[in-house]
Length: 609
Image (cartoon, rainbow, N blue to C red):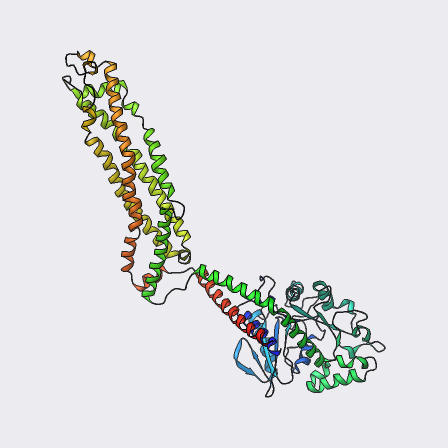
């Protein structure tokens, strides 16, 4: 069972190294799930003396005002033999055998964190003491509760200390060691008051009564120690600490413990309680209770650790791998990220992801609708037909058919198709560009490297623009070919009787009458509609071939070519990761290492039970 406390000690130290030390603003973490004993008391309650009595050493700073200004995680390790020594987590390779230097190091480390302004901090100091004269135990010494701020401290320090203490002891896994002086009314005890607020049933509270030997003559604390005046679920434990005179005379702690035992054994009011009084008994009771609580919490700890490991691994996968150190590794990493983006883009075009269907909507709805909106009737109005026919005849009327007039009318109609054709090219370009942005946002690795994201996005858009230009050339060429060479068969199939203008004997006046011109307009419109029907199918093919298919095939070709010419520093600049992401990955990796280590160690302890 003793290795249970050692296990928690190890995990607590690792948690502190990661900045997870149960401060008020922290989310529920592994620290919160670990059972601990928090020592709570008002100033001058004898809190420091109790801790030193349990350890058997003078090691805590003393003085007036608020002396303890940071939580002190005190981890006691029982060794079989050898010289007693102490170690601080912030100075792991240094052993302290002189406990006067331990006291000074606590004061110095407090100042390093809080400055000399007498402020407080929730960042704990970890102190491990190895001795044959202690029991395996972990205690968290918290700043003493106070009513007023001393000179040099902010007015808010009274509330700040209470908030810090409350943040520790309100957690359900915290065992509260409430220190109260016997020479003061228990109803005014700061420790009992705050303990009652966070643990109203007393399930987690141990009461310790100090300064029993300093009570007024004729009074005693037997009713409190017997649980009659203020009952707790656990028996009250009384201690007799060294007096200030003893401290000044450097009275040996072993001698002080002996005098404490003699006091309870010889004082009539406490003789019957002597076996369960004193600092030695207190240490044993707390050690045994802490072991029991830890053992009961192991299944919950294992569940929390397993769940957190899965969450951390998921987050690590989302953030991505760290940057490769060598040039080849950087180039390979960039290529892999680009391929992932390119595949996502292709998946959208192919329907595996949404987006590609918008291109079909351009061909099936927008482009045909734009062709229908073309106002061919303006080109084929009576006035315009007459004007173009007569202009085409020149100084003499046509003999058989107004061929040049037909050509000019057809050309004036077909030229207007260039607008919808260009609009279709631009519409598909806009869709492809939008798909690039969406694909980039879905490529998780690009979030990791903002510089690469910008460069890749610019290169992809530039490729699309080149493809758009080529597509416009090819698409407009299809339109130009239609009015550059007319389909002769269409006109050969037209009837050529006299009433339809085939008789050259008609007068000029008859040849340009409205009926004749309307027939020309109808013929031209029929031919133009036939060409529109053809272009409705050929223009989408041209766009798909020049833009969509080419984007799938060679969107990043130019980017890859330029990439191969870059040197190591240039590749590194592309992988200039967001510092926040780097910091997050480092933090996650350390936390994941902590939880995996805790997982294996807790499982080993669970098997040994």
